[in-house]
Structure formats: C-alpha cells, structure tokens
Image (cartoon, rainbow, N blue to C red):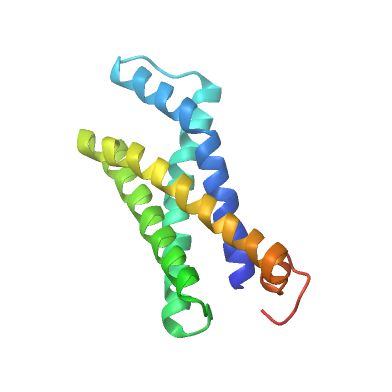
Length: 150
C-alpha cells in the first residue's frame, strides 16, 4: 500500500507541476471576467481536484506513518518525508485558499511552496539514487517493486 501511495502522490504532483501554467492563465482569465476555453477549463479542473487529491493522499500517508505501518529508519529520511508532507499540505491548503477564497497571500505561499517542494523532491530523488549507487542497498529497488522486503 505504501508503495502505491508513494507513486500515486508522485504522479499527482507531476501533473500539478505540468498544469501550473494553464492554471495560472485560467485564473487570469477568470479575474478578467473572461470564460476560459474548454481545454483550459478541463486542465483547471484537473489541477484543482489534483490538489485536493494530493492533500488527501498526504493525510493518508501521515496516518500510515503514525500507525507504525510505514517504517523509515534513517533520520535524514524521516526529515525529508516530514518536509515533503508539510510542503504538500501547504500546497493543497494554499491552493484551496487562493482558488476558493481568493486570498492573495495564499497565492504567494503557493508559489514559494512550489519551489521549496521542487527542492525537497530533488533531495528525495538524490537520496534514492544515493541508496542505489553508493550504498547499493534495496531501498530504491523496493520502491520500484523489485524487492518484497519493503
């Protein structure tokens, strides 16, 4: 379950990142009292619901961590996961507050959070590669489904 949730969150975050420019343009059109085109509306809807889904998935992951079902041993991994969960939560909440309530400060946090999240994801990927290339342990293999121990 943890592996599936991990990759589902990764896919949702990737879609969110790829749809951000269309989302920004759609919001500009709405603020200018213009109706976005159909494709823009579909992507806007995908981005909004993707943010809600990411928030829910993160809460599920946190619940699994707190229940003891998700075992992460090294301190660096604990810290990286905590930062990822925090940033993903900030992104979901700030996006909802900006889109749903029109709060400008939430939009600014959303932009800052995006770049902090990119950095945290980069560290997460770097850590995975470090496990695979330097430590040569089973961490990356287990997340890719090649090992049943994780």
